[in-house]
Length: 453
Ligand code: NDP
Image (cartoon, rainbow, N blue to C red; front, side, top):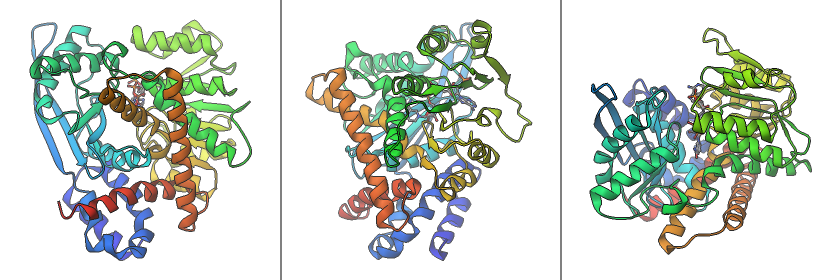
């Protein structure tokens, strides 16, 4: 690490205390950019890095609402408008009790590079709340989301900031927020993506992140003349990303052994087939139940509860070829990464954002496995959000096949950018470096063009 990057990192830590996830995301990116800063003194002169790590705007607001018992509840709402050099702020909303400023800043920071990689004109943002949708009635979720949008509406717009879903925010939440925006503004506008098909949504948006992550894995495998056919896969999570990752892996001939939620994981030696996947989808999307119930229904499967005191996650300690972490950040620690390697895993395609700690990511890179970091591998979700925005602007809808073809092409382009950028900077096969530099250059050049703003 150069003195310049080291000083910058010290500054980030001093100015943003108690935001470890943000420090981690910045460190991972700026380490890769060291070589770029050396080759391009113009970026350094214009303090592009110093500006890119500072959000353009942070909005923090009170979200009061009334629960089913008539009691007043108060949550915090956030929107981080990180960078608008190449387009309106774009990035999801997360509703989870763990949400805080540092987590959303890490996500918004990652989003800037991810969105740039998609080739579409989208800046980076992220937002959400520490509201926990788990166990809440539909009416409570509606009251909360309406209150959330009653503040957020004044900060967003089709050409300003277009949020989407993330953990805890799916079709139901997007619907309630869209309705409230429309009521407040008297305007039917594409201010959110992930909308319902009847009111401006895009086909393939729900599937896009999971499908894209698998397309990215297939692209990585193709560099070794290999495919997903017959590959044994570990998947974590059982939400939106995990579900469509499993669907696409099955379609491409792979076998999936695991799914999880925040209470524990399922190991199904026989494999999760389409019928079992349908059960998971119904369980999670309709009944909003716990993944443990899978083992009650399919008695050969084994449920292992989370052990918060363990130094590793046993989900990552099974013989397999591929891993698709699709739950949350830092779900693969250093020991998990080593366990994956020991078990023969040679493809890791990240559906979740920053699911691997830096030590684990370094292990993957050093061992030269096919490691697709989240900002490249899971960019399919925001890419199809970009396509949803395009369709809204045209007041027109593409077919499922058209959207899927574009998604595939975008994932292929992202893969090519990662590979060619890594080659150009002398780090063949290093998708982390390729994604970080590939995403950065377009944003940095646009910032240079637009002056000191
Ligand atoms: P969902 O809310 O649909 O699902 C999240 C899943 O992860 C659930 O199974 C949840 O379990 C589990 N999970 C969440 N937090 C934790 C935790 N702290 N420990 C263990 N398990 C946890 O979210 P998504 O599928 O949309 O998002 C998953 C990941 O993918 C996130 O990192 C997100 O940022 C990323 N991502 C999502 C995109 C999208 O389009 N949705 C786009 C790009 C990235 P439980 O049900 O118990 O909470």
